[in-house]
Image 1 (cartoon, rainbow, N blue to C red):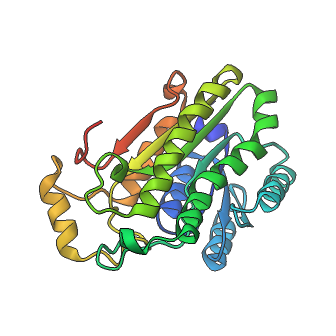
Image 2 (tube, rainbow, N blue to C red):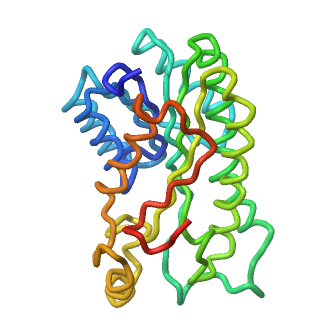
Length: 253
């Protein structure tokens, strides 16, 4: 199924990387369900600017009942179920190495908060999508990870551990759901220049990343969003359970 024929849910789709993903999908002609938690103004603007393509829904994706409501409202609005899901939403987090929780300061609450935002949110959207995807014999689920799992150059313990768990869930879900025509993949980036989460990162860190990257620049949200389109397109119909690192070649494999 071509992207222009799909209804795609983007969690956290009204700010940062999520907004770039939403805009890329709009440009491709897709219908986009923009989930937001607090970015109501931007979400409303997107609906006003693209009334035939965008439907914005406020929901906490770590709450199963709210996710189920989101899917029901989207189906009622467009008259067709969601075809694809991009699990992008990030619970509050800042990439600031100096302010990160050190190992001795980690708490169960902090670890659980990141796990819920990464893994449980992806579980709930996948479960909510499953019946309609099975009936259609088609589904695309794209989870957003991090290259810190492969290269934890800054030890953001809580965030990176949660994303590592999401990678494992991506692969087990791909194994389970492939028989129904549902592909599950992950895209993992490094620091993007810039998003809400990376605005606390000092400029010298971006300069260091750029100088260490074969492309000699830091990946932008628009560039990362463009790579997501591949996993939603027919060209990736035989690709599932994969983790594509999109960071300009900084981390290999």
